[in-house]
Length: 252
Image (cartoon, rainbow, N blue to C red; front, side, top):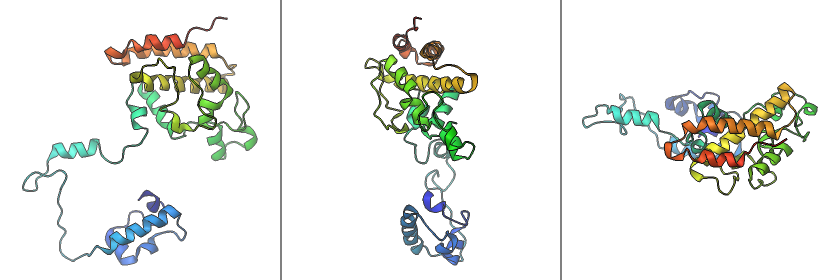
């Protein structure tokens, strides 16, 4: 119940402390609708608990051998793959991009890459300074950089990809359109290649004074695609040859 926990004034309280003090005494005065619903669910659970002065009986139902001894193999499995899997986990981590690009992708799908909308939210920029540095749109957001900026639209169109819908959010990052012939097995890696260089192009415009340039971004996509080839499984490496057909050098 993460929403309810965020409204707690004593998030480390034990069950005994909650039962003695009362749940409401450990919550802030005003709860969100989600937290209020979770409070009701927790009250039902707490009502079924009866503490006794006897010593605790502790068991390991998920990682115990017969006789109650610890089963280390089961414990390792619990530690290495447990909890709730994020909906973007497969897209972000199960691909052939370098580790730093995967970490960038994680920040991207969470909307946490440094851009002017985030700097505005943190109070670092004023609203007048939060416009897109490339197309001068009202607000530079992560989704704007990747999909809606006029430069991003030109990039995806030159790649041969259908445009995303107006107002599309980062929720479509893992399924955004690619050229019809792009192999599905390496699609996530190709998408990350494009997102990574749209981000690097934006930073070069902001910090190095680069003029927006399709030839610049396509060359860097081609260079990295060639380098990343060795990261793909052997039977997928031919996919890079197809990627390069989407990124021909711009003839000046």
